[in-house]
Length: 171
Image: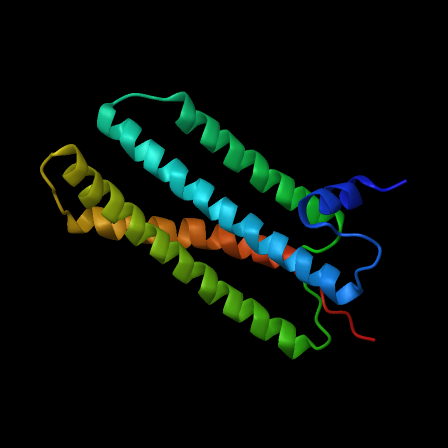
């Protein structure tokens, strides 16, 4: 009796027991890249629908549905990775762990800053232009958005990365 996974693979790509491990890994890689592409396309479609809803000053079922689908798919991905133990990073040396944490902090803060600049440009420039309103650029709002996102969102990213790391233990 074939498992559910084998039946799905045989339906999509004709996977059978005659394929070797390399071919199966390549098929898995193609599926994973396709899944990531679909996730990004879904996020882009959600952003477009939400901007169109903002322009029309309405709330559509498509926007709400896409938000729910994105949330559920993200939660499913995290649960599956956690269940298989793939959400941790192990280190052999203490110096390597310290270097990873330092790089993770700078990476997280820079991502928070990028999100802050993007949100300021979206709310202060792009949406007013789309809606035909006057664009008002305020330096204080920009600094506030940059600081809040850099340290707020950046530190949240860092905590997610930090909890993924298994502690180094001396042998």
